[in-house]
Length: 348
Image (tube, rainbow, N blue to C red; front, top):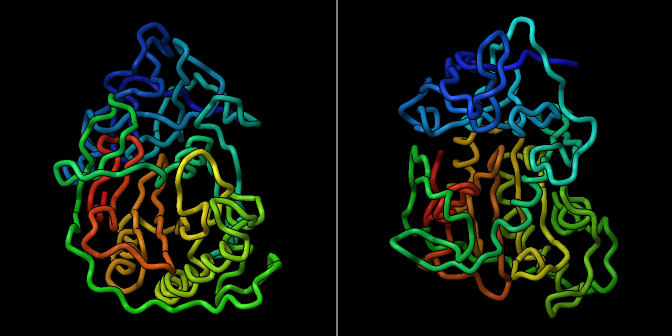
């Protein structure tokens, strides 16, 4: 399958037309071809949010093998960083579709497809290599408060644009409801189909999660039964409340327990999970985060904006959740901005 090549003047489906194609030597129909990183005009709903305003969005997501000046060339149907789609192109110059298989080192190639049966029936959810990498390290940084923003010690110093903010909730969370102490008797050699709570099994929160494949084992100073008990507490206290609010079949668990790596993470101890909500708008996911903050017991809540879609990271600590006044209890995360972490919940 081929698609129309994209050039200066060609627009996305909201009218954002390319003005700077990010290369200067490759032409189609005597017009410069656009490549990843091309800049375009402002388009609705600019000015709010300003991600749709000129200078704040660029072309991306080509994932194919035709390059101009060693940069992937844009095509009809590619999705810009503002989430609008390239809608026009050359009438007679075409280039190929996505690569048939992920290429090593290409962060935008599709690395994994997951079958998800949600409220609207079965669908395939795709994950790029970059999304998987970001998901795997999103919450695993030492956080400090600086100028009322939560920042990490790492990151790319060149990505220093401010977050695009529509609405911001930085109020202190209300006092949490009392947690349920899980009954972890007889969890010695738990089967994968062990029912942790009415809507969640051990498999759901370990090897059956969308981006995981390993079974729970002893690590991080905990035995396997202790980790399973942590997962049970997370399911009973926090995940069941989310399922009751929005429906279990809206929740795609991408990761909960993970094999330990060379960083600290509540995922390693079975205390945290990442949840996507396929088909939900950013507003709906933000509303879920607000619901968790205001109604459920949790240790940490992070509303995360990744390369293509947002998700919610939430944890529960049966030994005692951090106090509601602690600065890193409720956070917003943006993978390509500095500071990556900000206190409170932000809708973008």
